[in-house]
Length: 264
Ligand SMILES: [Zn+2]
Image (cartoon, rainbow, N blue to C red; front, side, top):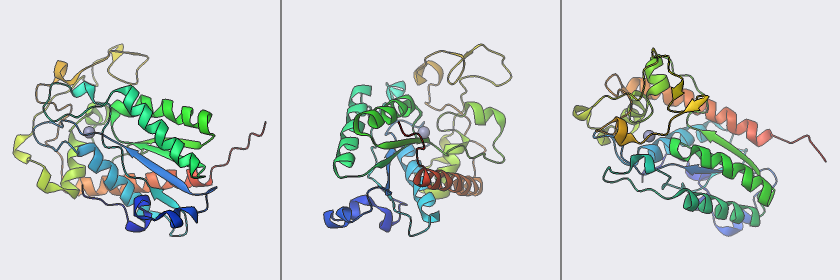
């Protein structure tokens, strides 16, 4: 898999003596979590994994050299059962996903590290990542953080419908990859589907509402796309990557400096 993580920040490129010498109290380790799953007929299975790597890699490039922040190899397999029935989706169960996070957390804590960031770019993993951030804090005393996608960056020029309901393989994700791996995008295979419209005043939401309905992609979109990729451009993708990277770098700096003032 291609990587945008700077070599000097790639944890797996270190040897054990170099790891032993790291300042354990302050070093921030980032564990990427993503997916290998269908992204419509126009995008690769690795979309969420590539986007994770691009955004994190670009963010790491912005950090001061002396700040010890390292990217762990990603957990590429996620909980993707919303995309079952589409060839190529490789999903693990929630129990497996959480067990892997727990075991990596155990290894990190056993090596003496204190701070771990779970950086997730697949919506289907999000609630599990939040659960595990707390569990790793409780079980190993790790100072854990979770961060999703673009860490709240606002994308100029993305319309409100796409911003709210462009869940999957829509304009944003397509633009990200047009800017980075255009050879993997089939621009002639775009399809459009939305799970809901912003002008509909519905009580039940697909996500993040007070009352939600559980969905499977095949209930909504035969092509596997939830959004509208047609307006995507490489230029917007590059601008949006730059703003996401800035926001993620700021969040990583805040995590690096974070101290819990509460002392029992
Ligand atoms: Zn995706």
